[in-house]
Image 1 (spheres, one colour):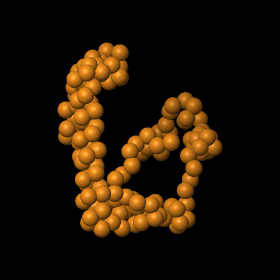
Image 2: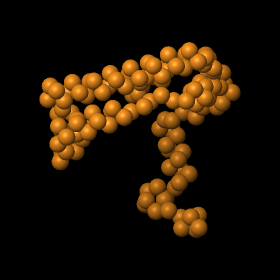
Image 3: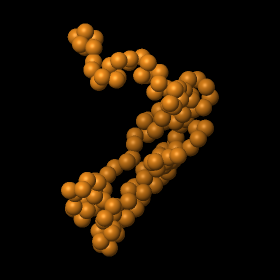
Length: 131
């Protein structure tokens, strides 16, 4: 299950991007994606469909929607080409087995609880290890 949008312009089984893939595939498409998000929020504002924007019981949904709209105008989700290539290389290393992956499951959390021990249960920390 994926809770975020894909990074535009990246492809599986590739570790490098040419400038065309970067500018058109990533920057341009990400820009359109941001415009779409801002337009969706603007549509919610114009149609008074902002009931889902209030997260806390004291929040005003209309104010929250308006703030989300103004914040969405300043979003820039274009990443530098070198950073994207680094991420693509990391994915390739994981898929080819060069990097070991540790699953994040119930057993993982149980191992952490065993390592932390009583500090986890009481919420205290070892004073000697901090200094």
